[in-house]
Image (cartoon, rainbow, N blue to C red; front, side):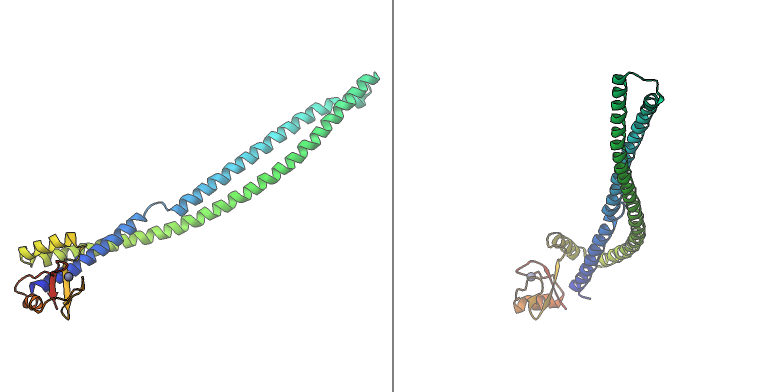
Length: 233
Ligand SMILES: [Zn+2]
């Protein structure tokens, strides 16, 4: 096999290794917590916060109502018990009782609203819990698949690397060095195929002499335009 053909094969292998390494990197980048999972957790935490607030508000109102009813009971007992006889005192007492009753009515309305708000918040917590469970299930499935891909790609890359070492060892050190130097500056494409006298990478027409020299395979000829090693199939 001509040395340029070996270099071309090595390049094909190197490109495959590079592509697989990139895929492995992408796979590894997706391992771990996902944005969807984080968002679902945050949504649940936010809903729980709202519920906690709504329940605390409801408890405050209930305590306030208990307190009012404790104040109202003795006043009503006094008002209807017949112990107060002075009209001015009776009027004052009546006004206090009616004020407290009206306040109680207002607080009861607020309590009802607050209970409805707490119920709605509880529903939202339930929905957020369900969404999180769903996100977690999807995430676990995705992670298992990614781990499987990671293992497969790792094994494939190991095999390719071994193959690469073998191919590189079979090359003469000078062309290998030229290949490596060019590969570093030519985005991984150090070898260009020649078809119908045209360099297939830079698309420049080569002279007959260049093509003949490249075809002989006895020396390494580079493209006069892009500088890549020419390989005539
Ligand atoms: Zn070229």
